[in-house]
Length: 234
Length: 332
Image 1: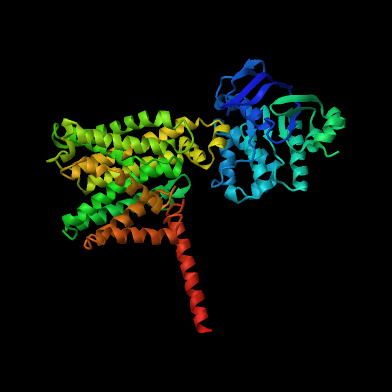
Image 2: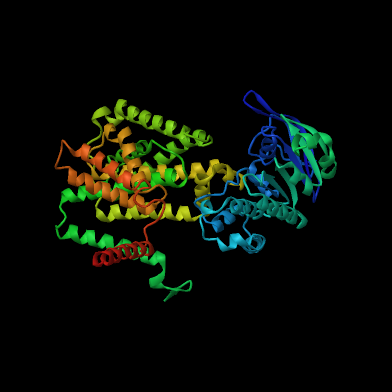
């Protein structure tokens, strides 16, 4: 579904991504793990169009989308849950969700998806008139995920969904990610919590200082000694 | 009579219309009976122009989150372009054409300044608009056709209360409708979180520029009204301090509240009118009042909320509650 070839990204003189190549097949959960500053978020931001690459190409269903705007990419079925959730704090939960469907004009479909999001996240339904900034961290993460689902994406990008959440909540969020995937949405997941990410992922890529250093199935990497040492605590 | 399931009396739009017409009628009666002299009417015109300026700057700064420091620049463009027209075309057609041309000229300059700077995030817009306003002022001060620092005088006067009210109502209605439209929601999303807005597929540059152009247009109209009420305009009137004055009204009324901007313009207008008898102390007292008010209400008069009957009722209930509590404590 998604293919990235030899992607290079610079921030001024800093070479942030050094020729990244990766692919995500239809219906998969693929995770990108690695330490702080490895370039995981930059990779996601480049794929969703928020950051322009210096060279390389991004293909969606075989079509080159390297030079399209974020808006076009959302229209083509890509949607992002940004790092740090980034909900619209002074808007209500409902308004946040409606903005997720900003580019859609089919009212019936939007209403249907809103119902679906409320079913998946009942706590959002309870708080639909509440300002998003007053939600707890876990609820904001759910809202950010619900908002991203409102564009009815084919592929969903999640950037550090476990960040700053209690372990029980992290488990809940990962269960929901798995569930969304089983509903037919392809998922690319960026995580620092490598053990959790590898548990639900079909395949994984490991990043280090701007390059991909390892890749394999979730199981393979969970059992690899290098990974255990570097990311899984022994 | 029913409108979309509600009776006419319950429809919010209808109530707002009635409220506006009542204000219009009261002032019209006061003016017609001579209870409000020309001196007070001049204050009303100043307040009215400030309402337009503040509401339009609030659209840019309070709702879209783009910090602009050049509103007086747009105002001066509107004033000068309008004056050129009214000095050449007589009567009401000249007046209306002048306002239209003034607004459009300001909007055009808005495009020229907005397009390159609004692509960037951060405070570039504040710097660019500040520079733009100064450049405009210096141009008007130095070219022959605007008569330099002395400015243009003997301008024909057209603005009366009905015209003023019409333009205030039009600007407020335009702004409120824009904010409730889909592009308006996009603007608020940009203020809330620009990156998230972009990730939702919102073309952030486009909507920032749209809000900026609407704001510039309305400021141009305000300038045109100025040039058709006061018989003389000069570059000094539209200096940096004027831009700051408008910003003060917006912050004082509440960033992101239309009714806040209207109230802010009225309250600050009345304060400076009452203070005008203490010439030497005027600016000191004005500044002191502002400081005191901002200490007690840092979010401005209205915060980001709108004044509505429901809000007034809640505030009333709250006050009554406090009052009863005091009463109880008094008895014990």
